[in-house]
Every structure is written in C-alpha cells, then in structure tokens.
Amino acid sequence: MDLTPRHEVEETEDVRQLIHRRRRWAILAISVVLIAALAFVTAQGLRNATLFFRNVDEAIDQRADLGTSRFRIQGRVIPSSVQGEAGVTTFQIVHECAVAAVRHTGDPPELFESPWIPVVLEGRWVEGESKTVAGADSHYFRSDRMLVKHTNEYASANEGRVSEKPPAGFLDDCSFEVPVDSS
Image (cartoon, rainbow, N blue to C red; front, side, top):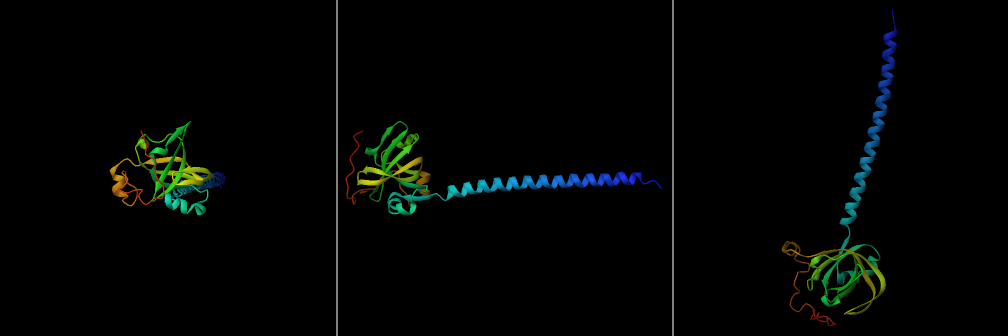
C-alpha cells in the first residue's frame, strides 16, 4: 500500500488551514478598521449635534457655565455696529435687550448686509474688553461660522426663533439706545 497521496493531502490540509487562519486575521483587521472609522464618524456627528444653541440673553446669563466650550448663539445684527477689516468682521448682536460683541473671522455671507439680519454664530466666549450699545463687557464672542436666515421655510419651521423683521417695539423695553445706521 502506497501512502504518498495521503501524505500530500495532509500537506494540502495544513496549507488550507494556514490560508484560512490568515484570511480570518485579515477579515478581523478590516472589521476593526471599519468599526473604528464608523465610531469616529458617529462621534463627529454627535459632537456637531451637541453644540449648544443659545439666544444672546441666555448665552450671557450662562457665560460661566459655557466657559470656553463651543456653542451656537443667535441674535439680530445691530446694523450700525458692523465693521470689517482684514478678514475680521466685528459687530454686535441683540436679543431680549441683551447685547454681545462679536468678532467673526472669515467672510460673512452676502445676506449679512441686510439691516437687523438674524444670524446664528458658532464659536466661543473669549475674555477681553469690548464695548456694546448696552455698555462695557468683559467678554466677546469669537465666531468662525455664520449662518444667515434667508428663506421663509426657516421662519415657519422655527417660529419661536428670530424673524427677519424686528417686531414693533423690539427694543422699547431696553435700557439703552441703538444708534441709527446712516447708510
């Protein structure tokens, strides 16, 4: 009886087992990489979704709690406060008689020029002296992303937020006067 073919079969089985083991490790490695990539993408999405959204008055009241963390702030741009120089636009936003100074880096959207335009800014509080129509402040909001309201769909979907035109008596209860923009 010749056992030679049987011996070759055993070698072939060993080779097959080795190939299967390598495939398993390759599949495992690819799976780990895909899971890590999916976890990263999910974490980034959740991070963006958890950026807190505050009106100016809320953001000022909660300044100590917010610290230097990123969040979104909403208000109306005071037209007479807008100044731009070397890629930095400074202006003030107001909501419920609370005013915050803003330093925005980057080009603002085209619709930013509209008077009393509602904006949502993304950034953080920074310590630094600033002067607003409501008086001096020890902080300003440093922004690097600006969203400007430009459609009626936004207003109907977000009725509790600011609208394009200031309501009658918008600043009547405020303790400060807003200079009228001469342009």
